[in-house]
Length: 431
Image (cartoon, rainbow, N blue to C red; front, side, top):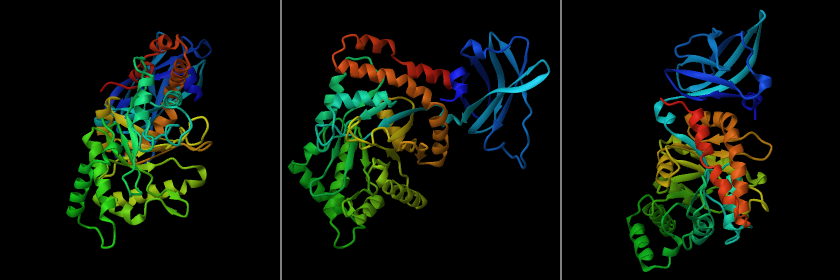
């Protein structure tokens, strides 16, 4: 975490564009307290430049006041972008820059949304993973996730097991049902995130066969010699997930399994053409030696967007172990939503308010998706989420302690309730 964040709290950091907002800089410790009697100024620098600016100019410092030990300044934010805020001290005739902060101004549609981190695709030992549903769930909070779902292969039950493990516990992590859906005789992997029922359980029914056959007959734009059933069963599966209130995700289309792509590209082409899914798993859970698959998915995404397609995106670890395997925490989704409730999250993804994130070990964390959201997300990853994640660590540890039989963990978790919400309330301005 940056020293400026360790020693000071600058609030708010997320402000309305085209408005004046009062910024407060509070020293957190005695050794960085502001000296009484000194003069202070602040300089606000828009990183992308000012509106209608034809050449670069140095910004004129603005006056700031010292009130009850805190610096306060009313500043005008011209447009949606990141800003640098420099705090200057003039003491005994000497000028110096004491600290530098980063702020972000947002248009109203994004200002009313908060960023939530989640993983929509993970496995436990109930399928081909390593740990139990409860252990994986608690570990998700420990690394800073706000929401998650277990999506074991062909199994809805493990996700319910995860929910039951923390039933009655007052926690901030949102745990949703899910499964990885595998239509019979179809190579496409589909994630059911949040549906009220299992889609895998419906494949053995007569209704499935009849409904898929009807979809097959209705399909157009399918080249001769290509299986109409594969596309039809995908369309059926995506629709059933939506019928259950969930998010239907088209998974890792460029995963190379063995000597070839797991999903033949002709089938990927058809899915992009018909677009029956809710979201594309733009960044998936690949080992460091496999990240070329993510590069191809991102390139394909931009090609499809250039054709005018609306493509909501998610990122997911596809983790098969949080302690005993790699990938856990490497990939995830940021959803910009008005709440952490499932309908709000699902609706926000569908409305293109999400990005996929790749954070490989020892590398720069990168967001992918719509440019506007990527630029904002990189600010959040650098300036806001380190504070968020620090609060989540202890919650995750206590969730694990609860699983291990610690009778006092529940009370401790209650005492930590809503810390992230309170942090966000301080960091976000009200328009």
